[in-house]
Image 1 (cartoon, one colour):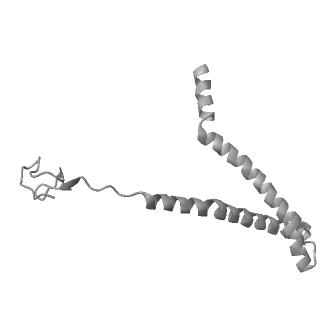
Image 2 (tube, rainbow, N blue to C red):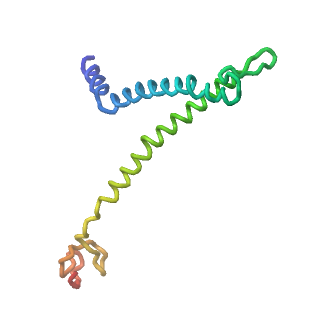
Image 3 (cartoon, helix red, strand yellow):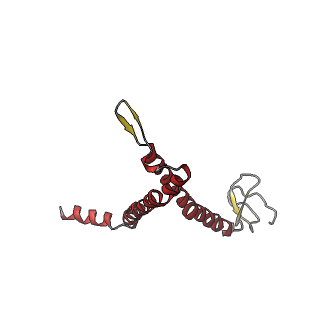
Length: 138
């Protein structure tokens, strides 16, 4: 029983689980921040342009009210969050990965193929260790 609890503890304390929990909390806080910005700043600006309270836009069908102003608020929030993630996380990470890949140099080969048996032999070898055929110096 205690061994299972210690395994559970080590699972929880692994870096990726803790990092994921932190990311979820920060993501929720960021989502709330963007939602507030859209509802309290962007929506009133759009309301000034269309001369109507944007968040109260709705229509009725047979007694059911469809609040499409709220849906548009959510869509604007989604686009803003996606843009921030793309420009502040994806673009820099892609550039960093591309930079790290361009900095890695390929090592010079230390072996070559024997022309007779196609086995790998060292560059400095004068004879193939597998078929004993004579090799030209590299």
